[in-house]
Image 1 (tube, helix red, strand yellow):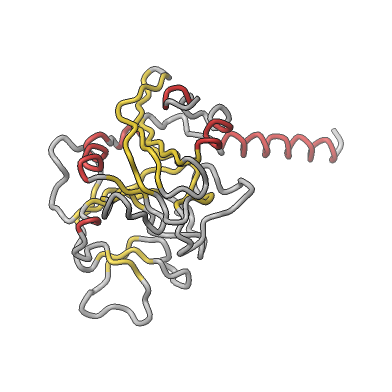
Image 2 (cartoon, rainbow, N blue to C red):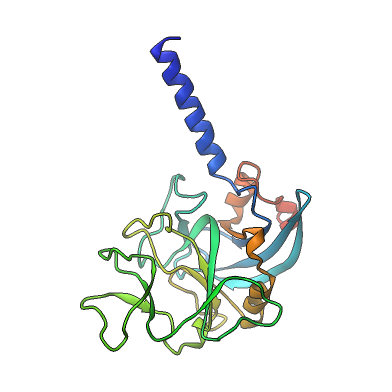
Length: 250
């Protein structure tokens, strides 16, 4: 076999592997779907779906949600980072689009709502999420001494006394590993008002967020797919997402 043929075969399998990677993982048994009318929309709809015997069923939705004040941009997750177009940057006011794993829940409380069964962390005044691209802890949960914080340390307090942060569900954008400047601190949290978009998170009414928390199960490896409607219709088969008809898309 010639070197050229060996190289061709290697590149073929590398491309095939990449294509398989840019899709909803087979182990994902719970899926949160966010749909925006277009790339610049701050409003959208949320759905919860569950997979059984390879078939998706809708368990909640549509419910109203808010995204970034400037809309959406491609994020860094399971799928999305290799797409052409606008990509998420720190403080751009856009929510990351693509497919992402769901991380831990963070809460002011000592326990989750009754019926919940998911990993969580009770936050204190020392819990922060670094949003400083210069920091080695960028886009990481860090615990500091709040009485003696590090100098020149840009961060987002996880317990600022803000009701909107009472419950945080991590959306694992730009996490494995974080790329400095590509966006940080992306969560589901309580909306501050029906007309108050975010700087990149997905927000909703508190009762709906609590329903999501009680529904999540670690063993089902939950994921989040956030896309404009047109992108969802064009990518759902290649990305192994539930059919648009299940979400009421024409």
